[in-house]
Image (cartoon, rainbow, N blue to C red; front, side, top):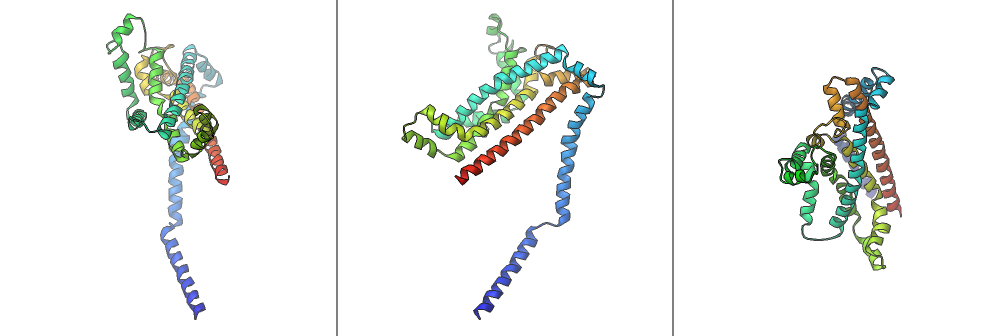
Length: 298
């Protein structure tokens, strides 16, 4: 009697599982449609434009391609872009790590305000950000007269480009580290302090190894945005050829002059940067997953 009852119960549970599986599992044609749609959009909006950049860049041959890259204006744009990245990325790295450390490890007045300020560049258009700097530092701005009297150039010069780039890129490192450090908690740091470690020692030997891959991930994204920033830089640069044009602005000028081969040649460098960024991003994500799995096993 008991054996028959258990058999009936198991048969009923199997039927229930089959019904549940049938209710939650889509038909094969639905899966194919979803996957096909995703692949179609991937090819149409990513691979096709990316491929067209290289095709147009090499349309007139390698000689024209190399000539466009070694043009003095192009070299000046590449140099300025590298300078902006070299200056802005380390500054954003220091700010991001310090802000994430303060927000996740301490309680202090104005904490919510700091988080709001970190999110500010995400909610403000880069063009508006550029106009803010023009309003503050421009010739007719709040401090414009003082800067003119002291022969200090901010707008339509490299300092203005640096300020605009730093403003639009400073949240990336902080926003990558804050959730990571919140998930890790404070236990390891508190244990290190109990054992006699000081603040810098705690950060160097306990916190930094745990957030290393998150830091690299944020730096990669910040660098890509700094090199490719257009809106804010376009407003504060003045488009002075050979002086304040970054690579995206130089591409725009060449395209407007109908010099398509040169425009796509310079754009191909930005495309290569995007591909390298994606590869580094994928590698960092893989290493972070590996480190997370190893920490769970330990």
